[in-house]
Length: 373
Image 1 (spheres, rainbow, N blue to C red):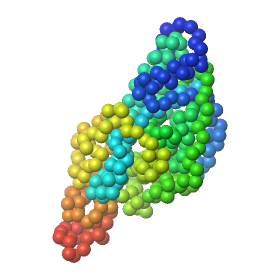
Image 2 (cartoon, helix red, strand yellow):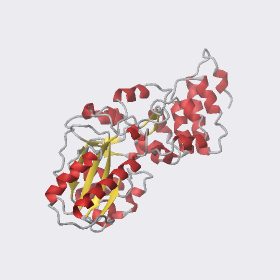
Image 3 (cartoon, one colour):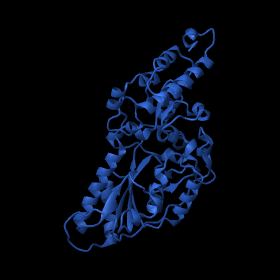
Image 4 (spheres, one colour):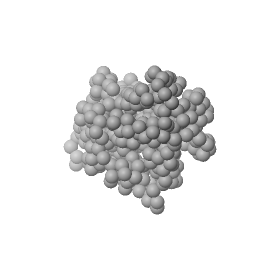
């Protein structure tokens, strides 16, 4: 656990908690909450989720034992967690829908269009910790944002930042769900906030809209079926049964958020760093598929897209192109990758060409281009 600052006096912790929330908002966070370390109920749910193998290849979900659900084991001395929320929606949801409805464009989950959120949030959390230390003197803490075995959504729910919806994302009644989370584990005995209550009611919009039926029951997600898992976490071949449902989603999926009624209250982010780079908010599939590895690395530098790697980038785009209406331009683009060094890429290219061939007809110019491979 890190320490920082110069000793001054023992603070009024109730007053300090209020100031922490004020300082957080001054740093750009939309909301700050505080909770304790009791995650016993979440631990039982996580064990059952893992038992069902819903985590797929995400071995890190079980790699650290009980550290994920017992904060004091991850960071000894922790008695409180400061949970922070930062909005990221870079455009209106109508723009999201327009891209999804155009099969010649690639849809990238809106959290990944701009600067890598890890860097943005870590910097803000560090500044918040520094500000706290001016008031308290040295104190124990560690800051996280999706970077360690931390139950972010559960902690945020307990800290009053929102409730975990039926799609398993966190929802705020005033702002929807388009936000990132970050945490400061600390040894400061701050007063805790009230747990958020559930406001999903009888709504099943997120369950009904999921292209692959990954939300197998309210509040239960089988990640192995989720498009975000299939296009980001999965390293091998995307199961053929799910490829048609992926549509033009080449990195992640936002469908359950787009359809959520509470997101009618969502506000666009004030963080300029989250704005789309290189026109990735509405890119043509054939243009993206033409990127070589060097261009991929250059265009994704400093973004969450970088972790995908060029090979899986091509894999995902090939699937989307296979789902597109017949096009000689797409066929030509796919055929240019038939001899790619990666069998993973070649397999998905062959599948995509098969789909294009099935959609072609003798009266469409260029049908002969895709025959005989």
